[in-house]
Image (cartoon, rainbow over all chains, first blue to last red; front, side):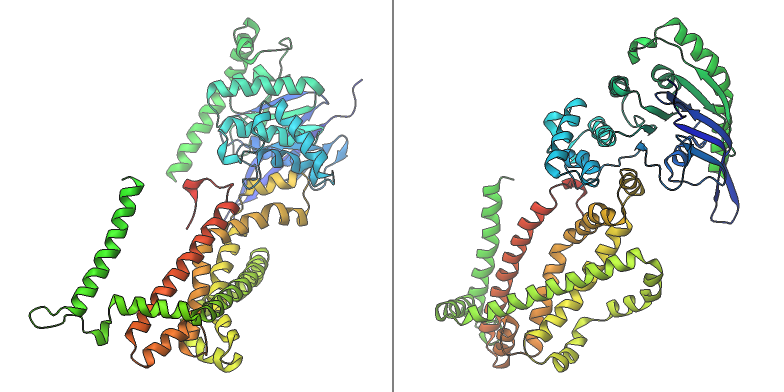
Length: 271
Length: 261
């Protein structure tokens, strides 16, 4: 029952022109594919271009070379099949939680009353049914992420792109959000591309972990399958033996890159 | 400090000031009146002048004129500021071309425009409105420009990824952001609308609070000048309170601590 590949990056290279005229190559020759229903994590040291790759998939960035294909069609402009959960707060601060969630339907032409009813359902399924009338600044960081998740999922995108979505949250909230994400994902198995620098989180959540080297000119240097049984509990799966074995194996490779990335970031800071 | 004590102290300041004023302007100290009535009048005279204005009803016409001029100046200046602010923010090239001229006009003290406006628009309402507009326009313009420019990239990208087209981005992202900046300067812009109206009246008109003060000054009626000032202050405070109510309603989504002034 394998359909077309959800995301296929072929030799994607992303370069930026810096203010002084030099060209900075963020990502070089990245090949990456995500099947339908597959949950894939991209892990790499800070500043390695993980988010860049995600933005290429979203259509927010154009690769300098190589191509991006979405469901076997070349990507032109924004990726209309994708929902994007941003790292930073991206909710509209002037809209209430329910309006933030409903907007994705409203702009499609769904009548407002229907959109609000669906939004209320989504808020309930992310555990915020009672917070519909709150503005983003009245919600905690974790609650805002839940609203953002509902905002993205209500449009029922075929692909979910997530850029360190739980980065700013505390450890316990991250676990709760991870489990919520898995629960929602299990319901309809979207293709997910999940960027994180947290290897444990990546293994606990996903089917595949892709490792990137330190930038500049970051490359994809490793690709591991995670065969831990589902359904998983984020906190408990970390105790299992297979988890540890896989973690040790991937960390062996990632460690060097993290050190390289660290050295580079300190040098860049000194320059 | 509790509310009651605070209020009591605030009233005390007013009472003490008025009492001292009355005392020094009527009772000689060592054979000399410290505040000669010709220059300083006294609270009782000022108060009776205010009472006379209100009881005879002449004041209402002047208040209505000033209010009307302020409203017109605010509405026209805001509309212009919003339009041009949006236009410049969305068209950086246009903004770059006009930048020195905007700065030049904004640097000009508006009072010097009053004679020209009086020539162009006559001594009626519109020359005062024009003066107010030149003040309000720039405040609103700068805020709207900033509001459109300062929309966080992430919020904009989020709008795009949720499927908004340019028109929808305008309505759901740029517009609310620009308005929030404009509303945060509402006190200033409304205040300047009143300033424009009153200064315009003072420099040449046939009605309004500024006219009233100017008339009193012309016949050395110091009590009338002070009375006009008090009525004007009360008028501005009332408008400011109305603005606060409107602002609270419009900016309900914004955290109180981060409110800009």
